[in-house]
Length: 178
Image 1 (cartoon, rainbow, N blue to C red):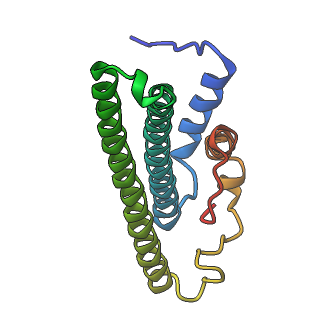
Image 2: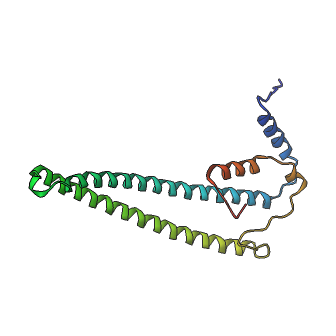
């Protein structure tokens, strides 16, 4: 029994041709390890960016809420003391407490961002030290230099370049490893 697979699109055809040609390619273990290392670095950068965006969203939400409360408080403060009801005074106090709590929360957020920045800086230093020890002869600016591509690599899958291009277009990603 023979199965005939008909690709649906050019992308699938290209992928299948690359898979078939991979079996007889001259790719080395070092090339594979290097590519896996690059993918891991890209993943790390994306995880960091996701974290930054989450902090930004939290900060935006906190700032919006602080602004809303300040406006509400400003309305109450603009009422002369003689004209304020007990309810107005109580509301004013509640707003001050809420504002204080939100400002504290934002301060914690800022501290967390700074802690993350320092942690990432330390991780980057450790990675640079690792790269220097792993590739001592090939180091120029803290990243391994690329060897001339083999014939198989020159005709290999377009996914790496396409993926990096999409990544750069998506989030403004720049990576010294690439």
